[in-house]
Structure formats: C-alpha cells, structure tokens
Image (cartoon, rainbow over all chains, first blue to last red; front, top):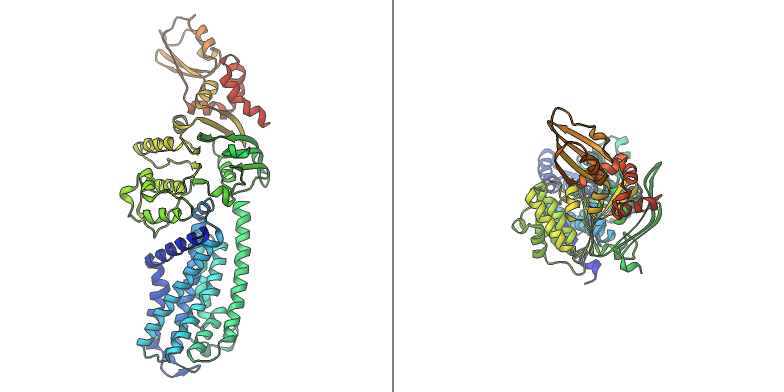
Length: 250
Length: 320
C-alpha cells in the first residue's frame, strides 16, 4: 500500500474508534435527535405536511438535525481543540500529509453521518413512517449528503475558532441553523419573514432535500444548492486555514 | 556535503513584527551527538526549535535537516519530536496512539519496543486520557521514536518526571544517541550537564556559548573557593579576590565564586585562612554567569584559563 494509503486507513480507523468511544458526542449527535424526534411526534398533531405524514416530515427534520450536528461538531469543536493543544503541531512534524489527515476526518464524518441517518430512519420506522424500500435508501443517502456541506462548515469553524470559544460558537451556529432552518418546527407554520430567512439557510435546503427524497420527488434543486454551499464552505475553510497558517506557522 | 550534517544553519534570523527573536545563528550538528539548547525564557529556544522542525520559516538564512528543507516530507520522515505542549488523544488507548503514529512511517519501530523504551509496557491498554502527567510525557516520547528518527527533538522532556523516571529517561536517551542526533532543550541544567556532549547557550536571540558542558562550566562558571577563618569577619575583603563574582559569608566560613581561581588561590594563601576547598561551579551557575551579562567580565578575567573559554566564546564573536 502507498504511504498515503497506509496513513489514510490508519487515521480513518482511529477517527472512527474515537467517535464511537466519545459518549458525549454520541449523545448530542445521535441520541438527542432520536429522543427529540420521539418527543415531537407525540406533541405534534397528525396530518400531512409537504406531501408527507407528520411523523415522516419530523423524521426528515430531526434526521437532518442529527447529521448536521455530526458534521459541525466533528470538525468545529474537535479540530479547534486539537489545534490549540499542540496536537496539530505535533502531526506536522511527522510525515502524515495534511490532505490525508483532513480527508480521513472528512470521510469519518460522512460515515458517521450515514450511521446517524440509519439510526434516525430506524426510529422513524417504529413511529409508523412507511415508504417503499427504494425510498428508504434514497432518504438514507439524502441524509448522508448533508455531511458534505456541514462537514465543510465544521472544517471552516475548526480553523476559525479557538478551543475556548469553539464549543460555544459551534453550538450557537448549530442551534441558529436548526431553529431558523425549520428543523425544530416546520417552516410552513413560520411567519413569512422567518420563512424568507429559512430559504437562505443550508439547513432548510438539507431538510427539504430529505423530504423530497422521502416523497419520491426530484431532489436536483436542493442537491445543487447544498453542493454550492459545500464549495463555499470549503472556500471559507481554505481561507481560515491559510489565516491560521500565517498566524501560527509564519 | 550537506548530508553529512544532521542540521546546518547559516545566518538564520527570525523576526516577529518588531521583535528580533533570532539574530543570525550559524551552527552545524553532527551525527550521534546530544546537543543541549539552553537559555532563559525569551532567549529564542522555542523559536529555534520551531524553525528546525519546520513549523515556522526563518526570516532570513538557510536551514537544512539532512540536506533537506525543514518541514519537507523528506525531512519529516527522518525526525521525531517531543514537544513541550503535549496533549493526548482522549479516546485512544496508549497502544492505539502509538500504532497511529507508526502508520505514518515506512519502517516504524515495533510497538512493543516503543512501549519498552518509554516504560509504558504495563500501560499499553490504558486510555491515554487516564495517564499521569509524567506518563503522558513518556507517551509523547514513544511517539517521537515511532519512526526510528535520525534526529530527535526533545523540548523540555522531563517536566513532570519523578527522579527515578528522569534517570531512566536519561539512560534511554544516551542509548539512542549512539545512532541518533538528539537536540534537547531543557530548563534542568543538571539534565544538560548529565546528557549533552555539547551545549549551545542562547541569549537574546544569539548564541553566546557553544561548547562541551565541562568547558561551559570551566569557562564561565569559574570555581567556588571555600575557606574557614577565625573571628567574626574574614581578615580581608573576599570580594576583592581576583575574578570574584559572588561572595557568601557564614560564621567563620566564606565561599567565593571566582572566574580566576588560580590567581585567587595564590592571593588567598597569603592570608591566615584554613581548610581551603576548591570545586567547579555547576552548569546552573555557569548559566547564571553568562546570562546575567557577566560573561564579558569572565572573558577578560579568564584569559589565563585556556582554550575552553575561547571555545565557549568563539561562537559569540561569530554571531555578531
């Protein structure tokens, strides 16, 4: 195996091991959205929204909420901490390539997102959400796709914030995107001004993507929007990385 | 040939805004040497290490690590570093952390050997977060050795070690130095004295001394002369002994630190004193003498003390 391949595999394995062992992280990104979903389906009256059952609609929202949290926290908080505690400096003295390290982390985020999505869909199935087998798979992939823009945003945050403020800043952004993107309560019941704001947020388009996928409709538009967000956030991350480079390693 | 040298530095300068952290350093490090870098806080030690590690770039000058630019993959493949600020990855076991680092290198040391060298064999399956401060430092040491480095950087390595672990650590480092160049920055002057073949003293971004520890001691530290006398006060003013740098007076006993011990002794025996005892000053005293600006004094007074001092001062003249 090539040196880069060997490093990538080992780093990915070690990242996944770390994720599975971090109970606080697991709680906030996996257990919390699942429990919140169970709460919401009992609070909201039934009926239909955006062509889905209420339980299906909420599943899309909370699934998106969980995957978004995984992406943001995976990089935002953890990367900031590792940067601050000298771990990143130490890695820079080894032959581990930066691209390999970030790539492995990114893939671990996507894989973790797939796991969170799977858990959410399983919980949804227990709450009477019914779809064709093919739609379950598209819904799963749609949920996992959210790991891309929010992983990229997390990466940017990881290089923008420091370890002391990182957790708070990441959390504020997380909740802002969740609340105003219509993940905690449906966009359809928001006042018009808030609906306008929601339509500018990646979180809305992510949940929208999942809802369309679950309803078996075309997902092209939100998918393209999310890809555009991914590119923009990666650009921001590259800028933040270079800024950090100049500050710490000039 | 550059390859002969583990490190070559020519005219290295580093400026942070208005602050000149390093003001023109020239030195070469050969293979299999243990070199201690000493200096008070702000002397430029950390800056120098960060340049050698490739974490920062010099403002001017050239550095080569085995002929390669620091920070290049080729250079990074041949070095190992134990940094001052060590953190551990919380969710990994000791062995897992070591294996992660081993995966970075083409021909890593076996895990068992690394555990053994770091004295962590019994802790192999413990979570890294649960280690004591000293054990975390030892884990950092194991990580630094994972790639069989030809050049090993140890930044304040034994902070948090108990006496026993420190001795053990020194033995391991001595063993490694047969094939590895070791660059050690330390506040424990005893450590530099015990370990290093060569001591580079940094002060205000310059190399003020570059010599074996014995020469640093002989050249700068001078010697302590102790003697007993009768009565309340000595029969003469000990501060006026040739080369006297410091005088400590006790009941019927005096201790004088002098950089011209031979002349001071000749002078001393003319007075009615008893029980004269002479011993070399340790590195800590040498260090204080240099960095408190007394080195110039010592240089003038030390003319009679031979080539050691000249060697110690040679680098200083070059640096300006």
